[in-house]
Length: 300
Ligand SMILES: [Zn+2]
Image (cartoon, rainbow, N blue to C red; front, side):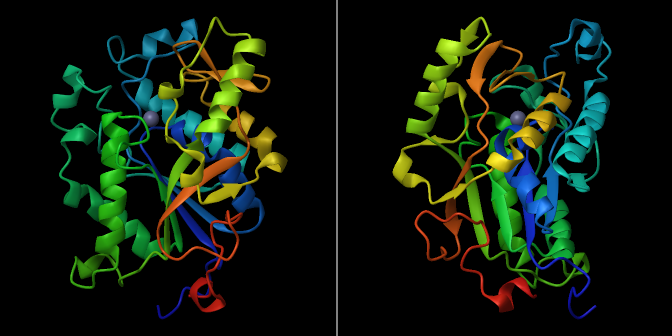
């Protein structure tokens, strides 16, 4: 195949650690680009087997009981992706290849096939195959801290950035496809002023027993670090529906949500990014992840 003439011209790849991270972090962005006809591909690195379970009637799924949560969460992710209009969602190396590593410092970190123990080059190879097939111009993932320090999120960052390099390296596993250079790489971000105000509103209005701290929220940075603001207001409903689809993990109530810790957070439809590789578009901040990419780049 010489050119991907049958592919949509704008192609976005997102790399996440567990089912639900994509809807919380990028649900509005995914819904917007999918609605606009872009190709949106999600790669999730684990099944989230180690998660807690909110609904009591599903508590039997947890790892310490039936250990059936990962399989269940595949269905939740499929439902969430229907809500945001994304058909192309995959698990790194196939469903169940890498297991949820649990929070930092727990014994699950040492399980042999957990994602934290994965060889980054081997894991990146699975992602290189996706990159060379899909040929995205834009990649969005976590920062070096994985947003907030979860081992699977840190590893997702490492694997995504390694795949970004290796996919463009013609010498790396040519059997995985022709080399592909991703034009722009973004980290998921949350401006400090936005989350501080959102948590204050949560404290005043949200129907949860407590409120999250800034430190509980992934990707928080000083406002000036943010390069790109995606207005997802038109897709707020789709994002909320996608989050609701992850019912074992998330409780949504109006403009707020809580994870299994029952600490309220604001449900924000505007999503924020930091461009870390590639040239920015002309606007400050950018309002489009594909900003500045010439016709010759998006037509490839
Ligand atoms: Zn996660």
